[in-house]
Length: 405
Image (cartoon, rainbow, N blue to C red):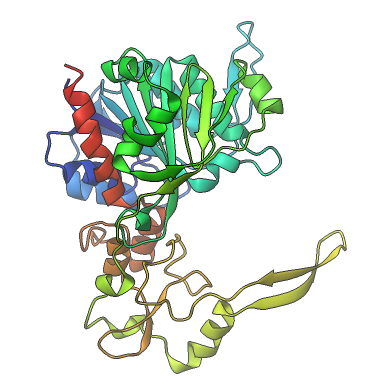
């Protein structure tokens, strides 16, 4: 089986870079990246800078437009559909057509993935999302992920998932993300998996278990999904664990304890001889101390309800002997979540550099040094995934596809 990828919501190319590092013959046949409302599509430009632009559909390039206007039937066939899609409200409703199909809320990007699955029927799918996906929305926890699982089941796919803290598997950042691996039930892998127990798949035989070994499993909880997406949208609620498996609508989920790998520490990614603009000046020090400190304030809602807002302190500066915290898109601006480090050369406090932000995510140095301003370099890294996690999964996927011939 040829190893080809279609990468949706591609950002600056983290999925592709992760597979390229395997040097095992993966080829990207098409990608899509569009930042709504952005005057300059910096991430798209960065992707093209590294990988070129040979992705035309009917003579036109559609990689840098809203995926919603792309005819999914024109996307080239591919072995793996990959992408890091946003966590949004996935609620659905009946359409007004006589067919009584379903429609998602306008602009919700999960439905673009589903439409691509319907049009192209790729044998494998690998997706990334925030860890709170499993608990969304707050008013009906588990509903959104239930909708995603039900869509896969309806289309003849089985699904594995894991919430991965990248630092527990050798990375430089304590970044928790949900990874979803789906495969068609008629693949060789799907047929073999159907003969295993859900415990075997979660513990040792599934892609996730092989890429991210576990030390121990908690109690496995099981439930069958409703087949009606409208019923799931309106009524489904479930507490998903950080690992699980779904086959033909039957859910098995549990809490796993990871078999951890030593992480990269923050001190190991720091540069020397950095520009003075990254240092905290004395006139700004009090602002940083306040932002990083504990707070307890009386506040009032617009309706007049009074309450107390409180938050704990954040380490200031960030310790050298731990991996970095989760990097956000706001890393470039002075705020509570911005990393502050002691410079190893001068001993002074400073923010991270763009290269250090790239190292936190496992990208090559200066990956985003393609003409975009520093602010956008940090923004793109805050949106990105941890590249070595993709390489870990890709290595197992290589073995799976080798048995699909």
